[in-house]
Image (cartoon, rainbow, N blue to C red; front, side, top):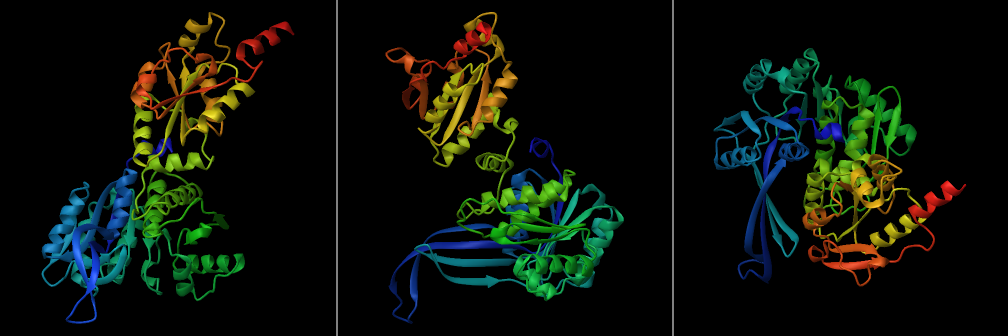
Length: 474
């Protein structure tokens, strides 16, 4: 994850762009003119749809994105380009034509229920001249991209000529092409690096009814051979992702709760392209995409994900390494802001935790029970020496932090240099500040920045000092 955070791939998305338009209102009466609902519109919103949702996902992951498409020379086209520019997407390779309508899908929502959708768009394939113009414009710049995504929504931009030309150009320059396919005939995608059909689409394209491991493997093999793919892939919704390179591999889903699967496929292809661009293996990319999809389907009305969200989600699954849970001051500040935004209760405690023992573990478990996220401030080696004497700490800060971060109760560890965590508590402003029972009746550093102070009794006879005495005595 840290490698991905330090990487900014340059990715080109080619496909069908559209605007998703929502009219929000309420319905309290029926029209006297006809037996239809009258919706009183209160608000309107627009978001990028189609290939635009793939673009949104790439941008939130941290990629530099360019887009290539053909849209209309109309007001919707102007609005679409403005939306893309607002998120710093390169739109210079978008063609605009008078004879084409920019796709806009308008949905009327009354009391959280969609009652009507109306579309304004062109569906016919782009002309051969348009395809040649796009290919000519890419011939000089294709080597600047780390990966190319073909996002096909069946609106005509990804014609046979354009797909074949882009794939041929990319293969010649050793650039991976990932395709989110449409329809049942995948011939135009032949030679791509991989396709990402879902199970239903794969059944339609291969004619194989996927009902068990054998039929799944047969469908993957057929897709790989028929489309001359480097890797064959099928997304399996709640069952995860299946791939075939030299053998079939399954990557089970890691979603904890599913609220909305809208756009999850766009998240998957964006995540895989992002990871592959960072020279990750297909196994690592599929696992990464599963995590990204797990975040997205746990949201309502959102189909994008950030690297920070993926890292935090992975931590909740206890699949991450301890390193991912050790944060600097700047990092923990942004982490706390995200958790607060999601309504999570933040708990803070601190200590030296020199020799980890059962008393520490039980103390931290009880601290975590007071909220959703437990952050532990950890005294540095110099700080411990000033507080405990020249013979301490027994274990260096790096080791102490790693062991603490490995505990299930601990979400994040933040080392600090001062004798007290005053500045850290001030910055975090925890909902709950936890200290040991020996602080009863005493002033607690940082209490004024905390919502509530909770005291937890230590386990009798369990302490680092007594542990050291027993070792020395033996």
